[in-house]
Amino acid sequence: MVFDNVEDRIKVIKGDITKIETDAIVNAANNSLLGGGGVDGAIHRAGGKEILEECIKIREKQGGCRTGEAVITTAGKLKAKYVIHTVGPVWKGGENNEKELLRKCYYNSLKLAVENNVKRIAFPNISTGVYRFPKDLAAEIAINEVVNFLQKDTSITEVIFVCFDDENYKIYLDYI
Ligand code: AR6
Image (cartoon, rainbow, N blue to C red; front, side):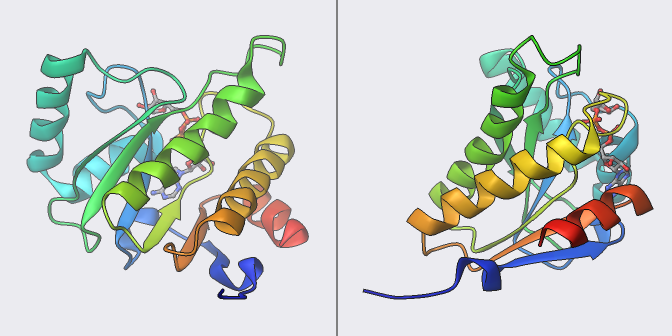
């Protein structure tokens, strides 16, 4: 039995997720998987066309990605090996299963990471941009789900929360 401290495997940094050296970065994508603005746009721009080509293949096979689910592609030119694309919920006031769907984004991304032998993974603050999820609540859900997952899984050695804006960074630092 290995006794380790879950908190020691979680880090918070402020920065651009496309620059992170890790095994997999998570993308806050949309149902189409065809790219967009925000972190999605930044990942496709920095990673190059290989990422979109694989997204298109996934679309042809399964018709995009449902909210709360996740799919995996190459990371193209990025330092990471994989991009895990997950689709966060659009915040519509909180009575439309938004919290459970956001929790599922973190769970399904981590599950897919483990299935692909990913040891180190970086998350952006899913849904807290144009999808308008309240940042404080999103951070609480993200951290709780990652902690729960790491308590059961010892194969993931590092989870980095990459905060882009000051507000999210401050919220995460207060939690961790
Ligand atoms: N690195 C890390 N985080 C970033 C970066 C970056 N380079 N750029 C922005 N963020 P958003 P959503 C942060 O809007 O709310 C897209 O068009 C940003 O500060 O990217 O899940 C998709 O195609 C915010 O905290 O994603 C979808 O249509 C967080 O990333 C839609 O936006 C998420 O903001 C998804 O909306």
